[in-house]
Amino acid sequence: MIRVLLAEDQAMVRGALAALLSREADIEVVAEVARGDTVIETALVAQPDVALLDIEMPGGGGLMAAQALRTALPSCRVVILTTFGRSGYLRRAMESGAVGFLLKDEPAKALAVALRRVMAGERVVDPDLAVASLSEGNNPLTSREREVLSASLFGASLAAIAAQLSLSEGTVRNHLSVAMQKLGAQNRMEAARLAEQKGWL
Image (cartoon, rainbow, N blue to C red; front, side, top):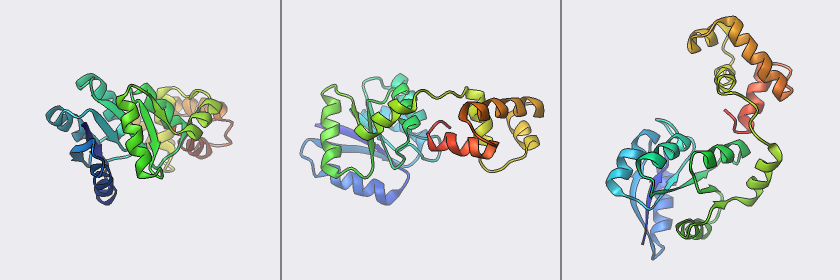
């Protein structure tokens, strides 16, 4: 029996996934959570074989939870299940210790097959996304450049970004300038949008 922890913030999606997986004779959903910051605590109690994690959830997303699970419960395999087919997310998921990365528009049977393959020691990745990830190359942004671009996404002023990140306005301007250059963007909003589309933020 494959014991699964399901982490998905949308109750309807979570319920549908749990119902579909429970139809499989060899799969049991042993825990469900709606927040990233409850994954570890729940996993330590439920002791799942596989954690099926959504990327974007309140309380820290699936990528943060995947990294924490690798330390807290190394025997648990992590599969990311997401709507966001962004190549940067795939790369970050694999760096966080995930062994699977699937899109939510996969048929239910494909998900069950993927869980069995993961339990057999395989890595399971959406093939189109794997190709896109290889063609995109590595994320060229430093962690500080990612922070500054993330803060720019909603049109915050330089002063607001500087205050939020405890940096000087000059430092923020420098990070934005370098990030724009790396991404070939005309302005910081374009740079932030490009980075977000690639899953680099």
